[in-house]
Image 1 (spheres, rainbow, N blue to C red):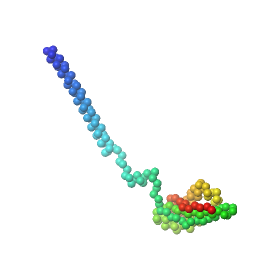
Image 2: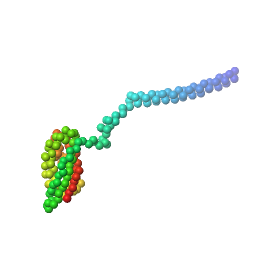
Image 3: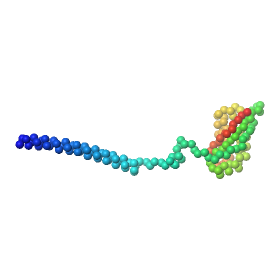
Image 4: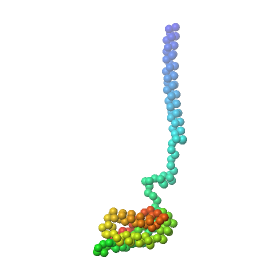
Length: 166
C-alpha cells in the first residue's frame, strides 16, 4: 500500500506538469490570435485611409505651384533719374497669369501697364536700381500696380527676363 501511495503521489505530479505546459501553449496561441485579429481589425477598420497621389500633389506645400500662362511685354528702354542723364535701363517684363482668358483681358490694358512701368522707372536713380533690394522693390511695386490695373484678374508673379543698366 505504501507503494501505491508513492505511485499516486508521483502520478499526481505528472499530470500537473502536463497541464501547465498545455496551459502555456494555449495562452501563447490565444495571444497570437488576439494580436493578429487586432492588427487585422486596425488595418481594415480603424487605420486612416491613404491619400490618393492626385490629392497629395495638390495639397503638398513643398511642391511648387504650377506655372500659369505667361504674357511678355515689349522691352522698355528708359532714362533713369540721374543728374547727368547718361544712364539708361533696358528691362523686359513677363507676367504670370492664371488662364488664357486672363491673358486676353490683360492684353487690352497693356498700354496702361506700359505707362505705369515708364513712369515708375524714370523716377528711380541708378543706385536704387542696381541693388538686389531695389530690384525686389521694383518687382513688388509693379506687381501691386499691375494687380490694381488688371482687376478682376490676378497677376501671380512678375519676372524680369532682361535687366540691363548702361
